[in-house]
Image (cartoon, rainbow, N blue to C red; front, side):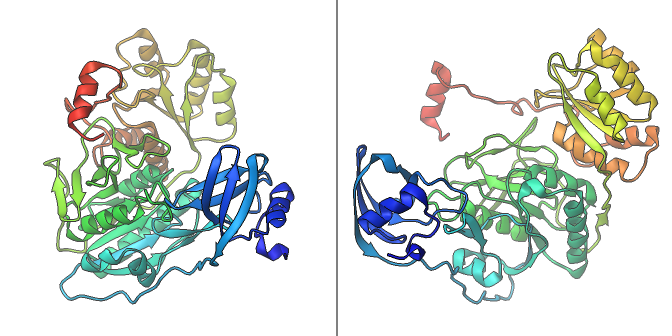
Length: 461
């Protein structure tokens, strides 16, 4: 059998497939020392090892079988996969809102190319309609791919381009904007756009998916439906993140762009508003506000675009025994701003003091946040905090470290005047600093105690 029939397999795995004459895309019954499995043999990516055979089983999930456990293989069927994403003409319906979807490289609607391990994005209106036909009942959709990068490669260049593109669409009279984005740095982009796109007349909704579209538990389609509903029919005209609320498919949350954070590596309900409540719930039926105060949709086309960013800004996450040469190296390398994520109420150790003093004298702008995430930097409570403020570090209340990093980059992109920088950092644009946390702004339930277990029996996770 030709090696072309064993896409991506090599070494021992390839020899085993040849021995039993089982092809990639063949439906196989495989007997192992751990039991019997049946499913479709999938291609292997070029960088994968040669010790496993990958099988897509009937549930839709993929499993890897260690070749050392395989006793017998039999091909019982064959159907070559079609990588093409179904495409249908997106219907235009009078009366529905006009939505613009910007693509950044996220996989909100996609299929996995098992030959390479890469994803094939569904992005044209026709592809999205083929993947999620419900969209045609929500909006009239147009799309534009601005970049094709993984979310970890998003940065100031992309933030500025996005902000300018959003401004142009608003001036054209768009009814709402959705941005497809990878989840890993989605909150950073949301914060950047909050500062760069101010007082918008329409919703600006960032959306992603935790699980790819080929998985039965994918959240991609429902997140996209919720995001389009919020952008087209919601009254909240702010930069927001739209993702799953609970782990089930009941509803999504709209999170304010400055107070949201990804809190779990794989849960579908990974995004949480920190130190506050979400803006709203969203379902297929519409948007249901949770907060009373928010920027409301308007009919004008006015928006303020501030596409600025100084890249020589960083976050220093303090840990015990941190050495001063870390701060010195940042100053020596030309960094203009440092956000500290300090312990407790905003503290670092005394050995850092001389380096902090040198940085302050060099004109480096330094601000303090807390690594607890919830709560405030209260640096006037203990001597350590008072000493640090005297050496030039300014506390930022309950601003999240990542939001503070983004805001400082945005501020320093406009001014280097110490007093102006401090004033802009301490003046909230959209709740990145709040006067107090609501009583229900901090709720973390820990399993194993009776009151929590009883609560979970009554409600969904």
